[in-house]
Length: 246
Image 1 (tube, rainbow, N blue to C red):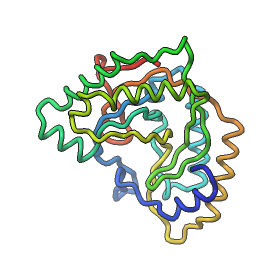
Image 2 (tube, one colour):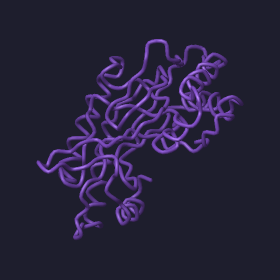
Image 3 (spheres, rainbow, N blue to C red):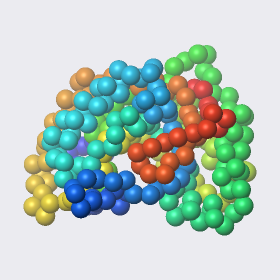
Image 4 (cartoon, one colour):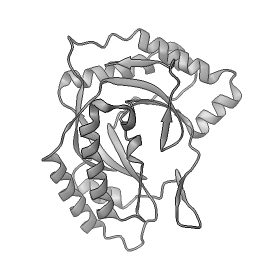
């Protein structure tokens, strides 16, 4: 996904994100997009990764300069996070919460059950992931993450399996998200110009990606938290919601 040919092919099919809208005064507003995920603590609540997120903010700024403010809608850098496990969102979440009594309570209970039965410790080994380059998705752009070593990968895999293979979680009827494309979103696509220079832009993205690889810093993935979101810029939790220390 970080190869030049993939940048070119992806840029052919990028679309404006429905998660944001442009107001009459030109300001950008986040659309309603509710749901739940298991994520690392957002930047503002993760002092252990302050240097990493400061570097990522610089990456976001360079990407903004390259793509421009019309094409790229940046996410607030205080909401930067790594999604460890997608759970449920938008219409699926709205339908489930409206049609099933106490759906949210049951979901939180299932995640707590998964985390409680999780044996993730690996002799005190730290779970570290690192930037591997820019990732261009259909409606968003960010950085791709890869595990520093096999143990770091296996511990995240254990976390995901504890959720998706929990029979009570499966019984909630939530679609399983077994495929992980580890990334941190830096922005969403806004207005797509009709004369977008795809080959030229792909070359510049690759150049920027290589530049970041030479300076990349590591992210300590030390905690997974169940978080609720109403849109793509705010992720929150109550103090008694389940967490998993990695």
